[in-house]
Image (tube, rainbow, N blue to C red; front, side):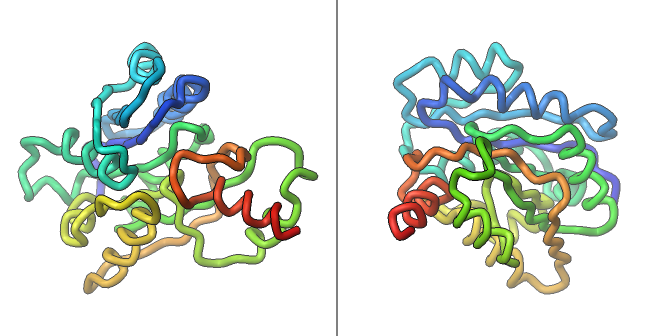
Length: 223
């Protein structure tokens, strides 16, 4: 089904160093996309210039005091969907990424093609920034994995998102909880994709109590 609009939601907490590059990459990825694209950055309890830099880079900025990544993502979606009638939901798509990440040029075209082919939930992969020798053990384990779910590279049709209850207000794993909710719906099509991975930070101190940074720190500590 053809999409009318894609909303790219980006939660951010004190990401002044990276948010402009993230927004710039998303805007570049709109090239060749037929749907209207809106980028929404949710500045969640920021104490730096994240909101201003995101706005200058071309994003719509929503300020949140939740201090919670799940609530921040949900607020970004709710803001973009305000006033949208339920009968339009099947033609709207939510693409999610993170403020410490950079999406590739074909990323949004990939989401648009998947949606047109009937996908309701698109689960993409990430690749780490930095040297391939850094975090080598994590990279090997990741390559061997199959069920990858990342808020940094996820897409969902709005009607499926609403039916699954949206992003829950949790401090971590809101992406996996949403994916599990969509998977539980009858008749949905889920696509696990390895094309167009999102480049994400290889830092070991993240903004949430879990996620890639937490996993990198854990694997490094156990190595």
